[in-house]
Image 1 (cartoon, rainbow, N blue to C red):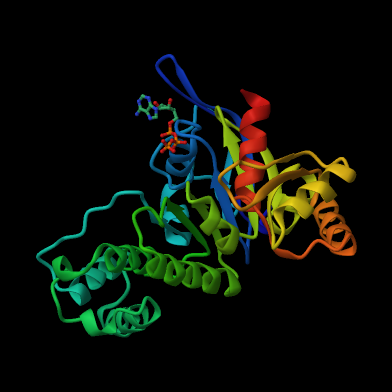
Image 2: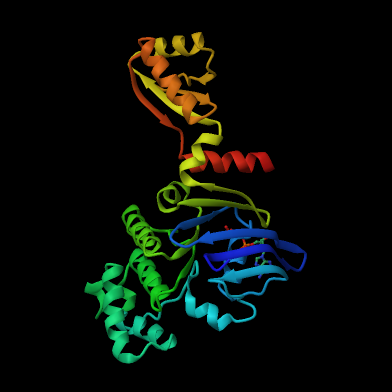
Length: 307
Ligand SMILES: Nc1ncnc2c1ncn2[C@@H]1O[C@H](COP(=O)(O)OP(=O)(O)OP(=O)(O)O)[C@@H](O)[C@H]1O
């Protein structure tokens, strides 16, 4: 148990008539990025608030770095970094002062705080903003400052609620690198998000949450193998492609106006077989790619199953 950054067993939390969490189980190992994915209202934020010591569960067991957040919130906070989905920044403060303020909150001695803040500003690529007011930072830069704030006390567990929301592609890549680097240092990272295509690159594991329970837990590399998915196929000669698919009895859709055909295959392995078969049939294939990401296909498959 001590070897898991986050452990949750049978966690329940009700708000009046709504059961936000109905017996959720979760493990977040050290050294990995675990993503929490699920539709609106699935209970992700409720769970993160409980893990961050900000909300008590009605029942169930929770351990953060081996410690019960209800019994000893202070010890958990000393080991856990938290970035909420919306967080205020004290706009009038200078960026360096902003982080020094949080160092003080975590009782980091002043002489060490200065060095720690410089280190963090380097880490989140904001050193040139050290002496500028927080309000000049862009949204992506503020988001990175939020990560720096969560890392002030070198937590072993890092919890982030929708950190990539509203970020442009470049800021998302920077955030991804930052989180991967934390995992490489041995931190247990838990991140909730809706941006599925990005999560595929950020996360090692994906936990799907729906109606207050974790319904599936998969390693990102294994996502594509278990689910049927759709592939987009393009060939120099569309008619030859359609003829080959028909001969092979592969279900396809060929929208009249489009220059591509969509096929449904049972697995990645079936997709690979189909591609080599088409080439062997003499079809001059110029494009063969999954529609949406693997994570997206898995997500759609699991929400379909449950609706
Ligand atoms: N403070 C509250 N009072 C009443 N109901 C709440 C409260 N917080 C959450 N809920 C309800 O609990 C359920 C789960 O909400 P939660 O915010 O945890 O979902 P989520 O998965 O984070 O959703 P989203 O992706 O939209 O942020 C929802 O039905 C929500 O309306």
